[in-house]
Length: 320
Image (tube, rainbow, N blue to C red; front, side, top):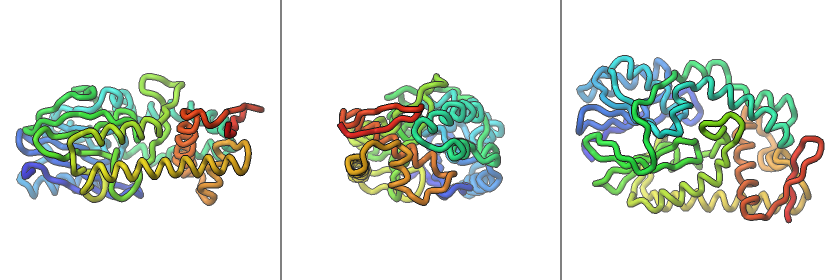
């Protein structure tokens, strides 16, 4: 695919650079331009200039999922170029009001985490976004909302494959003429993406069952005729199906480990389980840690292997 270029855009996050893909077969299309930082903008502009383009030349911006390291810079690109934006319909509300989305999540998940056994002060810290993070994203109006199976013509026909789990509204873009997929954060080569808890799109009071959805989406991407994955971070995935299978096996092993912990210990809160798995986790990492644990407890619940009891407002899990 000579008319596709990978740009490595810096981010202020531990995950490192985000991969922005540039399609040049029909105008100029960007897939995931990066976060709203000056360093990201300068890198994007310089990389485009090296290829004979400018930010003002961008015709379309495609977003794989509504996380700020992927979409944050899109609004600035649109302002400069007049580009049209494309994302899955379940990402639209989040993209249009990212700070409002965070406020809604914070209001829901603080009492939810305390019900999962997290101490009140730890729960307060866990759902507090560092103030600087608000500078890494800007509201983005979506011009075209995608559904699963919709196609986008960027000179190459791309099919949107809806892959919720890591985030609602996550899509992989699959070219019709090449055995590859642009996977965003759905599948990465070097790490296993965390299916983070979030509120269900269109609601303020219902959480996603992110890990069960994510595993379903991994199985779904294995049915797509794509051998190679162009990921949102890090290296190209040389065997997409094999990597998806590795991640599936990883989560099933962790699910069984958690089942063994509950069997040995007796009834446990999700926070108890998290402390066993990640004993030195700082409060700022409690939310992804709890997302991981609750996801595996959801799997056990779906398999009818755990019962859930409530006392004094705290839920506990026990094996059946």
